[in-house]
Length: 194
Ligand code: HEC
Image (tube, rainbow, N blue to C red; front, side, top):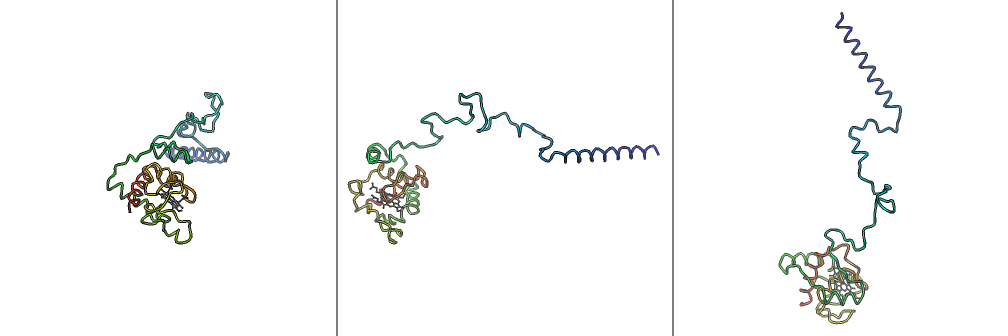
């Protein structure tokens, strides 16, 4: 008899606790409830948009010092003008190994990004040109609009052109990474000799 009562008391208590948990948890609809590991929500690191007394301007997000570059970023300090083009021609050399692998990758990149205008063999007769786009000069027989024969274009001039574009040709800097540009330069040199 006593044992029976004990279970009843325990059972009633359990129900009462469960009910109070349910009732209190429903009270504040905006509450996030019990935080098991508060550090996950209220961490000690500053949020970028949070006020911060450690800096003079009171902001957490600071402008990087002038001249800062991201890790792995390849500099190309030649401006997008004729002077930058000529200076790159004198100073910039392809440092990638001239091997079969780089050459093959350069060819694949050229076919994808350049052949629509320049044509598969660099004669300036790509599909886009066949549909009326202004034809680029042939790499082997044409004249550059910036002076000199196309077959004499240097590493630096070709790299500068891919980076910034020229006249009707747009910049490929956002599509083709620096190493990929150098592989394409390798392939353009091959087409200059056709
Ligand atoms: C949308 C068509 C188009 C595409 C795509 C294109 N080009 Fe051109 N390219 C041109 C035209 C047009 C010219 C001639 C521009 C001028 O000199 O007025 C040109 C000129 C050039 C020159 C000569 C620059 C000089 O100094 O005279 C080079 C080198 C060159 N392109 C390389 C490339 C490479 C490499 C690619 C691929 C990454 C490429 N082009 C993609 C249209 C294109």
